[in-house]
Length: 291
Image 1 (cartoon, helix red, strand yellow):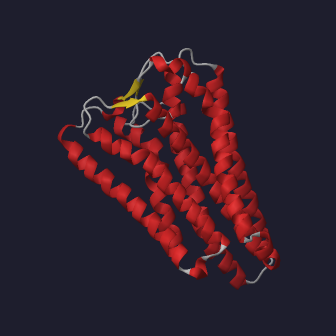
Image 2 (spheres, helix red, strand yellow):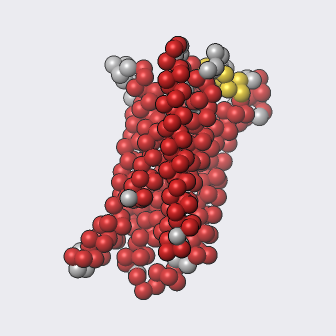
Image 3 (cartoon, helix red, strand yellow):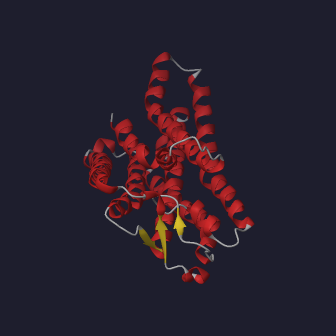
């Protein structure tokens, strides 16, 4: 861990004094986390059991559900454990591990949606060559590429955090967020700004651009097809469009909270707002695609 070994643990100060409400918060968080895991697992099991669903789009959907479970497991167990903690301390290795898992999951989710958008593009715009282009081997290779790309994106942009020297250990949040960790470093270098830009470019802008291009081409083709084909295209693309739109809303909530400090907003709202995607997206995915 380099110079950061001087700091043994971080304190998550945003929990404050939950008092008697900690039991209620614990139950709510536990039920929500359990519901996320069950909903996503059920969808994965249904796809695995039903051989009619052994198609590229549903294999990619399984990967997306795994990403949702991974992201939720990176967050909720820590929240649950902190409900009954008096010190709200997290050791440095565990804090780094959570940061890594959350950032990687976010990247995997966007890249998975980009892969699914490409799958829909090939299906709608090149239906006769779809089975050749999106065969099983290429789909699994695409999934592997998504995870490797997300992993390398994190290493490339945020690996420098592991060797930072920290001048404090108070994180004003309920989980280990890379933004707060960088703020605790001394001094805060230009690397932090460059890393944020790089991560947004690699993990958000590039996948989102691929999604946008795919749907623009789908829209162009749909304008020339029959009404029935248009309805099919709308039906198959609607869940992905909603997922991407919800992610965009979540990203706006996250970055507005950090870039524009709004003192009038209550503390609880300012803590929950950046977690919008982590709270709602994992439950939205199985229900949208399940229906």
